[in-house]
Length: 181
Length: 176
Image 1 (tube, chains in turn red, green):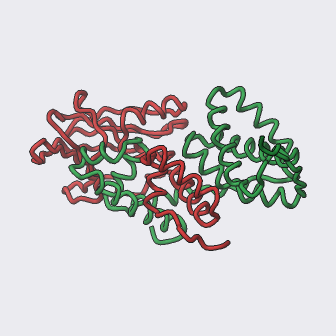
Image 2 (tube, rainbow over the protein chains, first blue to last red):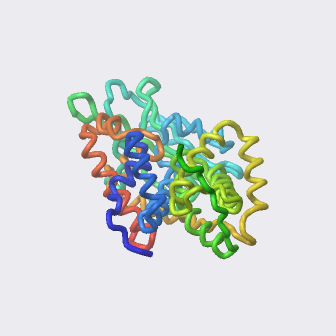
Image 3 (cartoon, chains in turn orange, yellow):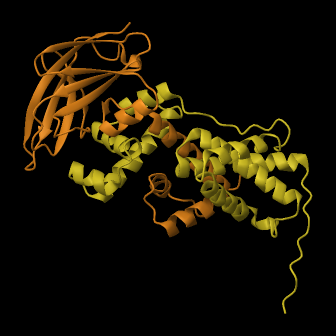
């Protein structure tokens, strides 16, 4: 394979895949990719990664993503969870996703973060700027079978809301006891 | 009066046809994934375009074989528009395509390992993860993500392409 004299920058390939190039830029990028072996190979690998990413079910779901899962015939079990209360959710046969609907006051929230924490409140993992429904006061956690064993069974979800002025307040701490099989 | 265009038939040996398929299958696949976001439709597109190009070459309908890249891209563009018109047509061209490719030619398609991808996603910083998921799972553009995260669109793009580069390195064999 001959080297490319004017390789497309990685940023351009990413922007092309994110549909952020204008029509002329995208057309020029396409023409280059169809004529250039090394760039075509790079673009193909990146497109494969992005395609796989589009299939990822993120740990925190938007309503649109949840609807797409339902439209695709996935079986979701929704469990409403209130702050401080213990809920239970079981992966019965045929269930694809456990969706924990964390309920709380999200009024005025500009953005929401979710942390996984120990019972003592020590953070294990954080998800920033997750999808949320301010009107319904809901954050949806998509629990997936392959999460078993990734974090301790007594892990809690702690939800934070950020207001317009940047102030952060805790919405609640939630616990769901999982029955994996 | 100009000279009439003389279209010279191009003889394509089967090995050459196979090489052509191997050269363009990935390009067509990338194009299809970007424009249709559907794996099945993209597989159909690859087959359809390869067959259409081979037939055009066999019948001498490619005026300038030295510009075959442009011809394949044009065929891709037309096919995507064509396929958007209806599933029935897509199925039909796929069936036709299956019978016309070089013997035993199957477009090679190495899929990303989903488990590996999830492991690698967990290796991203939380902000990187948020940007990558918002872009490619929730289809939000850099401006929208920037507003939500109090970042400029330019910052979002930088975070995004760096995160994607790290993710790609991880998926292709680096540390999660």
